[in-house]
Amino acid sequence: MKRKNWIMTIILSILVLLTACGPGERKSQGGGEKADTSKFPVATSNNDPAVKDAVLKVAVVKDAPLVGLFNLAFFQDGADGEIIENFFFDQIFEVDENFEVTDTGVATLQVDVPNKKATVKIKDGIKWSDGQPLIADDLIYAYEVIGSKDYTGVRYNEDSEKVVGMKEYHEGKASTISGVKKIDDKTIEVSFTELGQGIYTLGNGLQAIALPKHYLKDIPIKDMEKSEKIRSKIVTLGAYTISNIVQGESLELKANEFYFKGKPKIEKAVVQIVNSNTISSALKSGEYDIVIQIPIDQYKVFKDYDNLQILGRQELYYSYMGFKVGHFDKVKGENVTDPNAKMSDVRLRQALAYGLDVDQMVNAFYSGLRERATSTVPPVFKKYYPKNLEGYPYNPEKAKKLLDEAGYKDKDGDGYREDKDGKPFEVKIAAMSGGDIAEPLVQFYIQQWKEIGIKAVLTTGRLIEFNSFYDKVQADDPEIDVYFAAWGVGT
Image (cartoon, rainbow, N blue to C red; front, side, top):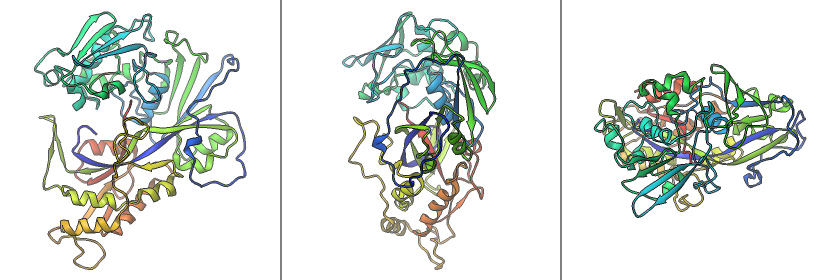
C-alpha cells in the first residue's frame, strides 16, 4: 500500500471465473486433487440469438458489504475493481496476451523513445455514457486529479513522478503539469523524465484512465471519493452504467447505447453481492449466469458441477505479508522508518518468511490454484516475470538461525523466543475474515511460527471484517505488527 511503511512477502493467485449453463447436479467423481490450471480456457462464446428481455444475473462473492467506488482512479476493493473491469471499463487502452498496449481500445499510443515522449490519440466517435464526446481534456484531467495534493486515492506513486512536472504539481509548486500537453481536441502529448519498457504495459507514469471532466470538474478533488458521481450516478465508457443501487448489496445496470463496441445485446444486468458460505448452493441451482471472485478454496466443491463452465488464468494480483516498520507522516506526505519498531530487524522479517511453508499451504487450502511468489511481478507477465528469483522458500532451520543471530532466543524454555532484551516477545497479526478457510489459514500461520519459536496472536483476538481491516491498516494501528492482504497490479 502506498501510504504505509511496510515490507512484503508474497504468494500469487489464479483467477477463477464461472459461467453457468443452467441447473445441474454435481458429478460423482472425487475431488481435492491439485488442479491442472493449463486446462482452463480464458474465454467463452455463445452464438445463439439474444434472448428477448433477458436479464444477466451476476454474483460477486464477497463477505463484506460492497464499498461501491466505481472509478478507476479511486477504487481499492477487489470487488469494485471486478465490477469496473467487467461493466464500466474507463481504461482508454486495451492490451494483448502479454499485457502490452494495442490499437483496439478507445485511444492509440505512439512512443518516441529518443525524446522520451508519448502521444495519445482518441479515436473518432468515442462517447461517454451520457452522450458527451471523450476529449483530450478528459485524459489530462485524469493526470490532474491523480497528481493533485488533495487526491485521496492510491494511484499516485513513484512512477507518476516520471511525468515531467508531476512532482512540482503534486507538491503545489505548479498549477499545471508541464509534461502533459493538449495537442488538439483528441490528442495529448506526455513527456517523461525517463522512459522504460514499462510504458508499453501501462507503466512509467502513463495514465490509462479517462475522467469525464464535464461531469466531475465542479467537485473538489478532496471530496471526489465521497461523491455519488463516482459511486451511484456514474458516467462511463463501458458497456453498462448504473440504473439503480442498493448500497453495499446490489446494482441494477442498463446497457450503454454509446458503448464504442456497440450497445450490448442484453439490455439489463443485475449484480449481487453473495456471501462465500452460500455461493456453492447458488451455483448448483443455477441461480446466476456469471460468478465473479469465486472462492478458490471452494474449487474442489464446484469443479464437478455439470452446469458450469470454468474460466481461469493467472491473476493480476498477489497476496502478501506486510510488516510495520514505521509510520506515514501525513504532513510531509512521506514514510518514516522507525529503527526501533518491533519488526525493524530484517533478520526477523526474513525468518518469518522462511518459516511459512507456502507450498504446503497452496495445496492444502487452495487445491493448487495458487503458487508461491518470488516477485511483485506476477508470472502472467511472461515477458517481464523474473524467473530466476528464489524468494523465500520454506526453510525453518534457516529461520531459526536468523532469529538466533538477531538475538531472539528462548531463555526460559517455554518454546517461545524472548526479544533481544530477554523480555517476552509476541507478534500481533491482522487478517481478514471471510470464507471457510480464513480461520484455519491464520491458525496455520500461527502454528508454523510456533515451530520456529515465535509466538503470534491475532491483534483483536479474532479475524477482522474486510472494511474494518483496511481502516486499521491505513490508520497505522499500533496494535498491528504484521498483516495479510492482497494487491492488484493492473496492466
